[in-house]
Image 1: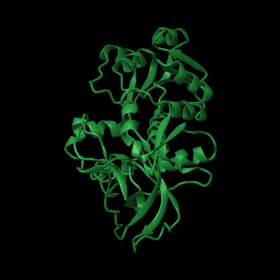
Image 2: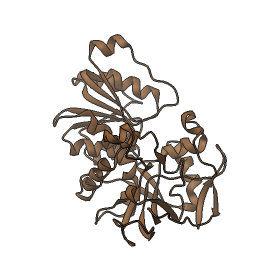
Image 3: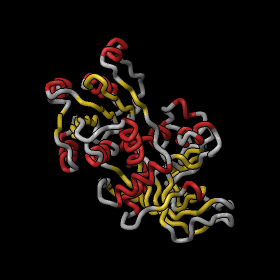
Length: 338
């Protein structure tokens, strides 16, 4: 089968023929129809997440936003049949036994396997996955539309869900890219008044088209001053990997506000403890999500409450897609199609 393979960090992926995977008794083989190109793939390929470098399989097939259909199943698989439309997320497998799994936080499983990091992912024509962690895609949702929901949609949904927002509260989304434009829609679906902040007028127009009630261009205006003038926000969600976005988001929060940490800057972020205490500011980090979170996101998408803007690219253009992500040239999500 054709696959885009990472052999060494900071090197171009190699488009090559590799053996087609064979599913074990509890696995399914999936013919990939679409696989989202996520900024996390860039970090994995470049080896700049030091905490992950030691566990990255090499050679490695990247990709953890996978949508396709089952073409073969192991003898122990009963819940899925050939032809079923399924997707595979970042959490390739969780043990179900550790403390975190028992607490319904399987995304923090201490024994987890990670798609496109510790096991091969979806930048390929076929991928295998545990049947327990291959989730069915609802009818009416295409593979192109569904694929980015398995990471981008899931990640921002879990963050917003954990913030416990109430209808009518103000949500500021910093960074309107692959995650941010979904955060705008999910925030609106949860009843929030959404303000979008970015440095691109094009991306801000995208946010307005998806329901943002206000937009601010941080390159041409003082976003913090404007947000303070209108009463600050209850929740600030940062999808950007820029430290400056976190500084602005923190300063835009009202007392008792929540800062949602989703985007991952290379450098550390730091806030004055006296201001955190004086405003009883909460900082809530979030990593991908659970299978139940994902089912809820897929159901919202099937109901028309959230839609990912996608641009399809052939698998052979995987390197070009990653370069576009590195250069901040992606509005919405690039989805690779074998």
